[in-house]
Length: 370
Image 1: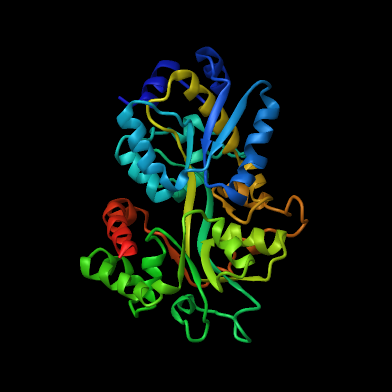
Image 2: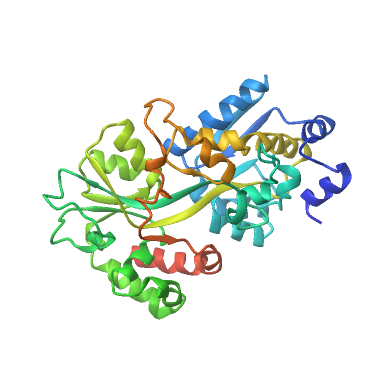
């Protein structure tokens, strides 16, 4: 029986009793949180961590920016019997993998997370964003493409296939050093119908076809591992266009005033959220659950949208999204889910990537090394 279920059974934990539970078990006075660095992590720090620490004197937190390697690192920690992370931010597909492998703890969302202000239970408020029993959703984001407005001539790109059009848009591209998004876009721009992408990608032939399309621009690609790299490469003029998360591009455009445009075509919509590593000591688990109850409530998720252009995963948070905390601009039009931005989107197939990720990753990395 998982630790979550044991604790629930032994304490009859409810949201109202979360504080009493934590006190009864004793809470750790520190947390190690894992995220992605850059503007996104900064938004978490401002919206969640700083207010929580202000309410809990004597508590400290540290960040580890290893979310891109979360699955591999949690596997290694589990094998070594030494879990050093307390709370990990991951994409939805990775949450499914970690849950299936018993590396993330199952969560009773209605018992352990705050209800909406009108009493709607958390599971109904989060809705379809709960893609796994271990996943605590935070945001809706997208992987999309930014471009240098002064390097694309008089005809800015409007199609994702501009990535592969080096004649019209010469220059280097920046792409993620992982297959997700790259292989979908490659197949789309090689003529595969959008509705058939994942059927094709489930075959060896389809995977090879995607890599063959990427081969056509491979010598023009700068491969990134951290999402903050693309905005910097664009700002420095080292690439003409590149993929990253929409919030990183928003920060470069709106906050830094860089000459960058955003291409929303075929953006890859996805959910991001927390998982709790399986096997935490009780004092660390008590601290994490106390923090999660605070950090995922309706107001806190809306607060994060005041710092970065990611949509909150709770339905009750959406009406509370207003102005940027520092710039004073309306944030809603900068969200990936805004109707003007969502005319042609991919919704990442989480179950597909949970099933095929290891195999396609291995093939992609072997291709990169060629």
